[in-house]
Image (cartoon, rainbow, N blue to C red; front, top):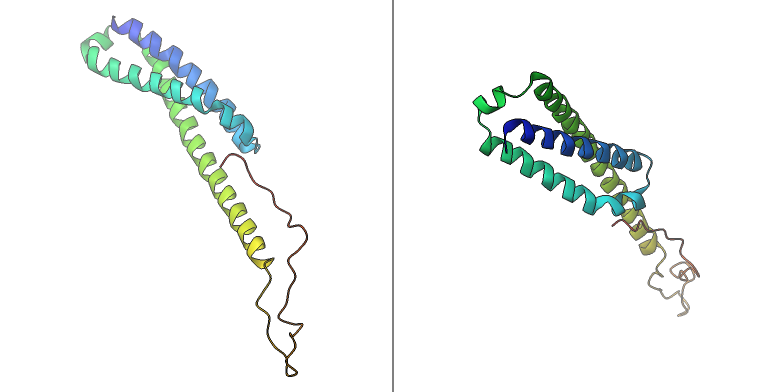
Length: 149
């Protein structure tokens, strides 16, 4: 496969990856984690294809071969590559935020569950159970979980 064909192929994969990352970033920013879960496999496939095309270009098309490729094609690849990198950085940031939010929610749920447990009883001066140390377990504990964990 000549360098022009390899670069054209990489441009197509890069554009698909950029489009995909744009969709995923919008879903993450809007908190639509159910949508992002459905996209994981497709993201993995596109990322692997992108990586293999980059490696293939580096291994099989030397600087001389790339120099023969039309400048507009090289510029398009360079621009698109920078765009994919920017989208990937944004994606990583949004994923870190989503994971931190989920961690905090989970910690709050755990704290609420711990607070709702009955405490140990104590005896009063008369030998009866002191009312202050007893807490009945709540009939229902409000809980909400993010299924993306």
